[in-house]
Length: 145
Length: 457
Figure (tube, each protein chain N blue to C red):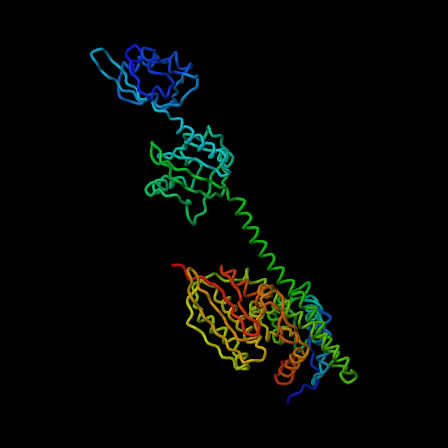
């Protein structure tokens, strides 16, 4: 199993502190070491990415993105990332509470690599995070910046 | 009959009765005796004019005529004049008809029309307005003096005006009492040019001048506004229900997640009491989540409903059976059904209706193997569908209550569910213009029946 020798950088874009903490707790149980960075809204996320680009250092290997964010909406962030040649390669997993077909479709159209509905049950949520780890971090070869 | 000097030479019994004189009192008297005071002076001139151009005709065309009774009262009359040539000179034979009864009837009609809360107007064979009431004056903003004698097209919006005479002709070709313009929105044009939405009822009235049309005109502006308001209010309600449920779910999710995280993280240091407490807490949250989802579904039945179209009930039933496939297999249920008709329905809601009724039949079994039968029979204008089971049944005192949202008859441990299934069924059936009811003997199963309409011919 290919395991990255350095910890994986994950950018979590999520405004709900309760959900942030849940995600952090879930990743604690991960078999792969990861650095979790949190942006609380779309503007923070964009700033973070631009800074990392400028410094040539610290770009995330994976972005977990909530769609409903204050200030700058998650859909806009998604569109920006996938439009930018320097950021486009980063896999984006959309975590959303919305179950509407239109939202799911739209996310894929904007270039999301995967769309996951935030499950109601904790075990399910942990399972989702483990699946993300397993697929993106353990199985798939991630493009390294 | 009178002679050329205007003296009465002949009367009949009806004349005596009509004017209250004996013939002896009338013969040789001037005819002016029977003419009201205000017409007396002019009457000889009228007679002279008649003798100059004697012809068989009605007297006083267009004017109301009156006779003077012996006791001084006036009688409304109609007079026909017939010149008679005789060697003794010209005579005039007048037929006099008492039209008091007719006048009274006309007066009653006029009073009724005037008093009507609806606009009423009468239009002659040429489309001219001959009668209006106060409500018409108010609706259209004209005093009646500006309406009488005018073409009715004056009150019709300009864009419709050219076509209106044709519509009138169509009505005259088949004059039946009916509403005007079925299916179309009708508008009237007020004096100030503004338009009002109206409903118009047309009634043919036979007169001796031909078939006139009595039209009732109702301003439906207020009703239309109320309908629009209701529609808007329903949409708002649905939007509210969606937002509320969405926003309500999120904190519930947080509570459930963290309570479960607690359990997971401190598993080893928690005693059985603690895990019990956690289970109750999580159970409560889960129930609340389901209630919110059900409330949202319920609120959407009206606003998210599809159009009613000819729908094959067999297909809807099959979908419901597929949905319940697991529950059917698990319970070993035996389900039988008649061939079902095509009905006027929203396909998805019909599926939901069957699903909910069948789910109940499979649930409330009291441990016995479910035996369910679905049937349909025609009664008059409706199809009556029945879903019959062999389950625990329902006591008569609860026959109404079970259809109320969130009403449950059993403990949560006995039978799960939020108590919304039948409320949804009822709302669906009522949306389809039908009725839903139950017959049952406790311990002997229940039969749920609902009515649906066939597609229109």
